[in-house]
Image (cartoon, rainbow, N blue to C red):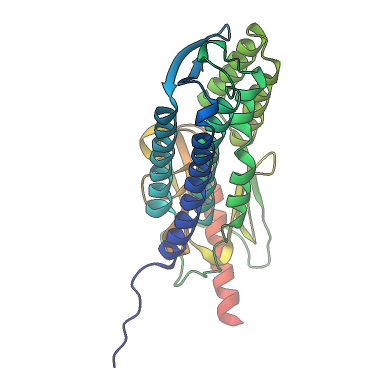
Length: 336
């Protein structure tokens, strides 16, 4: 009997697995919270407060059923979004980890919203007297980060996949003697998006102070760390390959020299190619992008149909050196 190999790329099978279990985990979190709140329904007002004014007075209400339906529907919508990202563009482990972590965070967010909103209204006769402490919103936003981080860590990395064939003859090369060693390093920093990030930190800080919600200061603190991690990266090319890593140590990725198919210079439109700035997933082939500004970038095409794009100065020299190092790695592998 003739057997035919599975034509499905291996990364798609890995993406399906991580998408399935992370989506289920996110859904279970929200559904578990929904079941808990449903069990509390006799202890809750007929219509529960779901929004509070700046003065802490409830200004919108829903039935318990309506609140649960909205939370579950929102979670399902977010899970669908992140599942689509993982399934369509999850060729790299970093993208699959992001999608899995985001899916679990979405489920945790839905669960936290339900439990916190309903929990403070148990035993109340009317939603008009419902009070929500300032720290509750911080808990809703931050608590889901722990299960999300665990989910991302559980997604396996990419297996080693050496590139086949030589680097393209017309790809740029560095002029180096066979015995010479060289290292290229640059720091890529954010542009306009970093200014917007600073504005968001300042605005949320002012809001927390004006409303005297001191626990909410955790939100701008978290935003400050996030923007620091996403808008300054160290980029390095050496004999081991290509490395890009946040100045805070995470996120980052490394392309082993054995997996470099070709490096080149490209031009990037942040919104058109990646939908924004920071650590992104590209619309074209799901390339991982470290996109801090428009313009020149180094493109590293990697085995398995993967790729990394980084907006950085002196991209041509980086590409040339990386191609030379890839040539050497292939020669060493052949001679060995």
